[in-house]
Each structure stands twice: as C-alpha cells, then as structure tokens.
Image 1 (tube, one colour):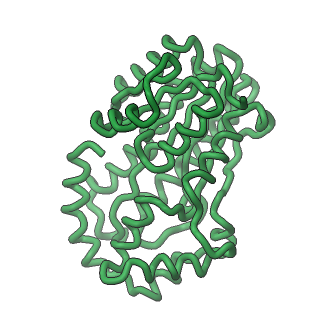
Image 2 (cartoon, helix red, strand yellow):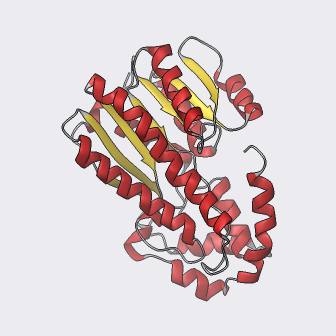
Length: 287
C-alpha cells in the first residue's frame, strides 16, 4: 500500500477533511497520530476508526507550543519515525469588513492558522531532517493565492502559510524533507456551510448555487478528493514536489469571484459584527 510503515501526524483530524484523510491513510496502511482539540470528538473518531497499535489519538491545542511539541514527540516515540505531517487544523472566522475586526478577532485566526502551522514545522522539521526524509503538507486555501472580500484575516493567514512553506523549502530543500501546500477551493463540508449562512442567512443555498456557477466544473469538491491529493503528497509518488502550492479548486481561482459575491449579495457588514459573539462563544469552546 502507498503509505505502508509510514507514520503520519494529522491535525484537525476530527474535522471534515481531516477525518476523510485519516480514513484514506489508514486504508493505505499508515501509522497514524490523529490530533484534535475536542476530547469527545476524538473519542467519536476512535470509535469509528477503531483502536489498534497503528493509531494514537491525541488531544492538543494548535496555538500552544508545549502541546504541539508533546504531540510530535509522542508520535515519534510511538512509531520510531515521523514520515509525514498534514497540518489541517484551521479556522475560517467571521465574514465582515477588514475595518471591523478587533485585534483579538484578527489575532485568533492568525494564531490558529499561521502560528499553529509554524509550530508544527518548528518541531517536526528537526526530526525529519535527522531522518533525511519526510513530507510536510500544509492545508491552505484558494484564499491563500487570491484576495477574499470579507475574510481579511483568513486570507492573510492562508497567504502566510504559503510563504512559510516556500521558505521551509528553501531552507531545508537539500535535507530530504519536502514542504508543500495543498490549497482546496470550495469543498462540500461544514466550513462552506458556515460561509453560506453568514453571507445570506435567509437563503444560503443561493450562495452555494452562485459560487458553483463560477467554478468551471460547476460543483464543489469533496473531502475525499482533498484526501486523495494529500495521499499523493505524503507518498513517494511526489518525491520531486517541493515548495509547491497545489490548488484543488475545480478551476475557481482561474477567475476569482470574491468581488462578484459582494456585488451580488451586497454583503451586510453589520451582520458580520453580530456574528462576532457567536465566534467568541465557539472559540471559547473546544471544537
């Protein structure tokens, strides 16, 4: 199988893409360290995937260096190597004008999406360079290569991920370790549902239909399609891929639609301000 005897750490493993990636990697005989913030959701994932010597489930906090370092070290100690990391944990934030974000709102998204990925890189890279092999895959977004109206911190964070990965490639390109970005476009899962509802609470389906009309393939991607791409990047099939930003967006960013969204739906920035309370509540809970 494509990941036989390879140890892989996946963050955000209880989320839509993370869970599908974990399932696919398990089918390909990977040894897995599955990380998430929510102990209950990790328990549900464990019930779904089962308990055996090839899987460990770890509760962690993406923004906490000691938590990240501990998870990486436990993975390496358990399996004797760290062959791949899928940095999937992330937060989409609230849709509103860039002038309406508080420092706290802006910082939270960057801490999860940027600092969280950097901490994984910081602590995984020495292990991988010591092995002279490894694949670090950071999940970014189509919003990491173009602007996205109403999502200033999210777009900034995903652009930053691309920059960090390219920098890591330059610094460690001769070490045998590969660093790549997987940038999904709209995927049929919870995150897109959240964005639909924020843009047009009265008729979120209208937003979905409009976005699909701007995608040359006229549909959203699936969690499984992103997992398959991650599998390719984690495997020996991609050994000459390094420093890349690989889009999986059905062609959406060939002609970006952010301005079209704002014009069509006349995005209500006041509604974005009202969403802050919901965001703060969710951030204070484990998800």
